[in-house]
Image (cartoon, rainbow, N blue to C red; front, side, top):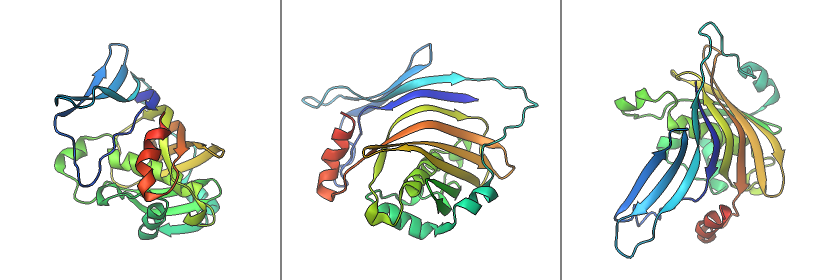
Length: 239
């Protein structure tokens, strides 16, 4: 298993639709011998901003006996019994869009969602049109992102007009136990919530019922809605 711990999203990298990636921007991932890593952006353009650290954390590996079965903490059919509000994919992404979280086709990996009190269940798959090389991912990044989208679904009660958008701020740990194959189930549980932040756990389970990945201690901070103000709000969120 691969474990990523103490993840901090220190600064957003915001692209305006009309601008694209700034000229001379170079991204690098620096990994130390002890597994500590940083994700940085440096600019080679004269007069441009200097180096920025966007995220950091620590990577570890864990061994487990091959005979151990990876048992998740949830069974999809049991969670469905609690999450009685069924949400089809089209409506789900409408709800997220109304919250100010818009995802393009490549990140719309939730095929079907179910919402309950402080929890949500979703059926997820690799986005249509994925390239062949993407099959090498043990956990496709868009599927991981989709599992985090379930936290947003779980956080909304009474409709999107009563909700607020939240963005990831930190993760206590994320463990990938085995490669995903085909469609998977994701379950998000909200553990704590106040006026500014949500803390939750997320699990991904395969069709065989075995645990694929678990995200523990995911902290999301609230981003004020308001189109023209979202860029500044996103920047201030991480200060």
